[in-house]
Length: 260
Image 1 (cartoon, one colour):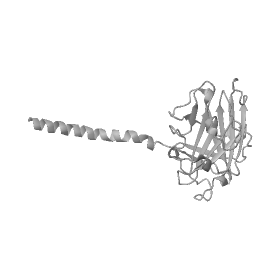
Image 2: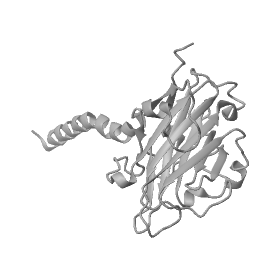
Image 3: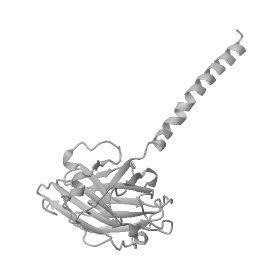
Image 4: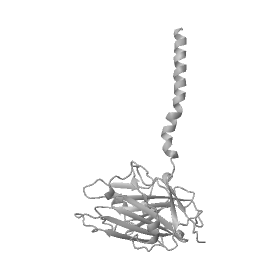
């Protein structure tokens, strides 16, 4: 075989091998984009929970909790002392959300609504009820039951003072602490949160009503900062970095009332 023919043969062989490998190289970076978004069913509460932070209502006893993961890695939280679970239910007018946060050091310095709760310890809910992914409500609650609520319109360039002008009119929250809030030298156990969020508060110019047919996108988060330990960031559908990543929000399914 002449040198020119040898070169052509090797070139053709390399191209065929490359073509065979090309789909693999192309698909690998995109596999994450097509991962199945998590789904959570919110059962119908014939008797709604009392918003006192205690999580002893019958509806919570029968609800199936979901666990938050390490936000950066997407891995299961290995330390049971830091585990976080979330439960959701609803009735005809309201969405109810419950957090259980295992925590050996429960604290916060914030005392007023719309302070920057994410800088210390807080649970968070992002919820979107229309077809515009850049618009969603953000809710945060601290261990002292301080509320931050805002309406995000651009997750890549958030004007915090402007977004925090939103005040959800009907929202109710409650927190219970097993331990001593703001006593940093002792060992605490857990803090629990209940949130009652009227559907009416979520109505936008793009959504006239919320029913069990509404496509609801949602994500749950927790920020944890314990003395002598690395800061923790946990989520239901991990975002790797900033929580503000609506493309990975999960889907919330409202189960109809079977007594109708």
